[in-house]
Amino acid sequence: MTRQPVLHVTAKFLIPLIMLFALYVQFHGEYSPGGGFQAGVIFGAGLILYGLVFGVEQAQRVLPLGVLRVLAALGVLLYGGVGMVSLLAGQEFLDYGALSADPVAGQHLGILLVELGVGITVTAVMVIIFYVFAGREKT
Amino acid sequence: MATAPRKTVSTGGAVVEHLIVVVLLALLASTAVAVIRLTNLFAVVMLFGIYSLLSASVFLVMNAGDVAFTEAAVGAGIATVLMLSTMALCAPREMPSRRNKPLRLLLVALTGAVLVWGTMDLPGFGDPSAPANQHVAPRYIQESPREIGIPNMVSSILASYRGFDTFGEVTVIFTAGLGVLMLLAGRRRKKGGEES
Image (cartoon, rainbow over the protein chains, first blue to last red):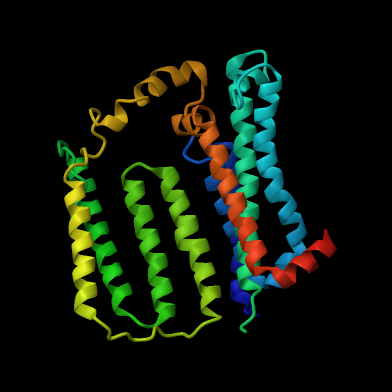
């Protein structure tokens, strides 16, 4: 949307840091505050900043709407899939203890996968909403 | 408005914390008044962002790091961007309305009074004998290190004990995205379909 070099340089410096922090919040969520939802909104905010500074068209070239729609569904499917796997392993729906021989290790794996599903869906939906809102033209 | 959550003040740190919360809540209240009084929508959107950032600070003082993350990223970041892009489609100023102002003020004051009256019955902040902390919370705190084995108990409650609720939340977010796509992206949907 703009051609200002200060904005471009600052954004290029900040966006990787924001995304790195989002990944930290995502995968360190078992030890520190955070989790899939928080990581998803921070990652989404990084992508939205890219779209704001470099334009929505450029952002859609990097991450097309079609890919985001698939990702949004994929996150929910990953969450539900983990539940189905524990169901097939003879436990209750979303009882992660069934995912591994050691119930505690199974819980770790289940929480990691489920939070990843949350993160993917939240990121995708936030960016989808931004694309759609920012792409509307005055009628 | 500028009342901190009731809590036992015992140490110097708690007094400072109390003071910080009072100052933050006073800033929140003055931001809210400014939002009501301004008619320039751009300024209002910016003040909403500041309001969210202040709320995030209050959550942080209350040791709710996760909530503060979310409030700062969604409230101050993404919601501000969405409101700005909505503003690009409408008039930059709010239309002044002179109809029945006293009645509105009365209604707002009454609702506010009822809400304040409602907080009288709330248990103190972090009160261990509060009903919410007596139900399943003690079991989670005692058993989750053995059953789940991860240090962040919030994660083990949200993702494992309450996994079904969180599944519902993800579905709600997915549905929100679907709804926005179906309602607003008519023209773009075709384009996206060709790309995928």
